[in-house]
Image 1: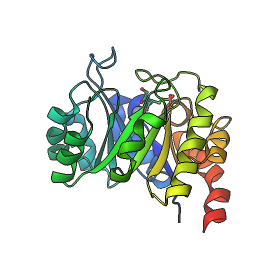
Image 2: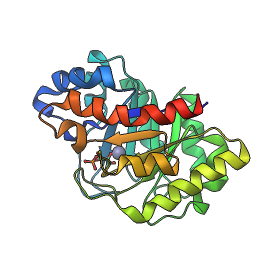
Image 3: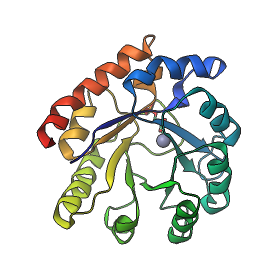
Image 4: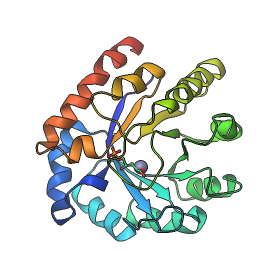
Length: 225
Ligand code: DX5
Ligand code: ZN
């Protein structure tokens, strides 16, 4: 059975009041998405292990660290020690994602691969048997608040069709520009995890915004129950 999950991305949270902002949405969230950017893989520098450690103290939600870094293998252990539950790194960052995968599994972390809008679904097929989640990026990584790239929708569909055909059980998450208008397209195409920063934490009532997004998933969850 496919499980539908909402993953608020703290990138758009109020970092001066991070615990309060996270606590506000917790009831409507299934995991927290933590965008780690190293200034190399993408231009900005964002969150590191110290923030993950601080989040770990204030929430029981699973912490998914999205590593937009050039050397995910080197970084993974720090995030495990900080309290991460899973790491998602980019197929574009590692010439062979398997060493990172082994490292993550050795640290008892969930493991996922993200693919940029310009990367084909075919490129990630060899690794799908070994990952828990495929993050289909619906913007180019680097910033919150970008517009959803509609041309990625067929790739979400291809990922779902492949899972259905092969019986593989990886989750399909979407990340970037997901809001009340675009979430339905993603769900219809086969995504089962919605990541969202601006649509949740950019709303003056983040809890209500999360609740509305999660409500969109209910009919899909019923369909597969
Ligand atoms: C982009 C990040 C996303 C980002 C999404 O590089 O990976 O997770 O937080 O932000 P929104 O939902 O505002 O597009
Ligand atoms: Zn992300």
